[in-house]
Image 1 (cartoon, rainbow, N blue to C red):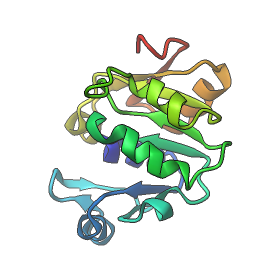
Image 2: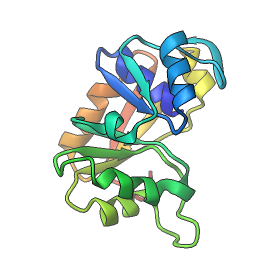
Image 3: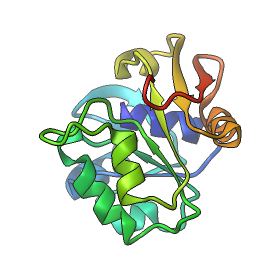
Length: 171
């Protein structure tokens, strides 16, 4: 799903850096403009750049989408803390709760990046449906109408519909 969200943002005329833990896979995406392993045949936009470097991926970004498994979410957010400013808007795409801690991802963002504006993007989205251009939707939830509007503007298009909420727990 994270690659599809990144591609939507790129298709909406924005430069996007996508972090992958595997540098070889990042190189393959950049060379082939496809995610051959998971969605072969689906072209990724030229404005999407994949990298195996977390520092490179987040360098100078205004908005950061975090899409990692819930089991590693806190660790990755802790690593991110050294590379982002307090102005960086951080949006969680990760569903679930923290194993052992029973924390939602939005709560972890609040604990690990307390000064950063944040939100949660959630929806019943399947990467294949997004890639095929089927109409689908997601909800951006934050405590700020400005944040919701900003994420709406980055993602909303004719087939990916974005709705807003102030309920980060319920989304």
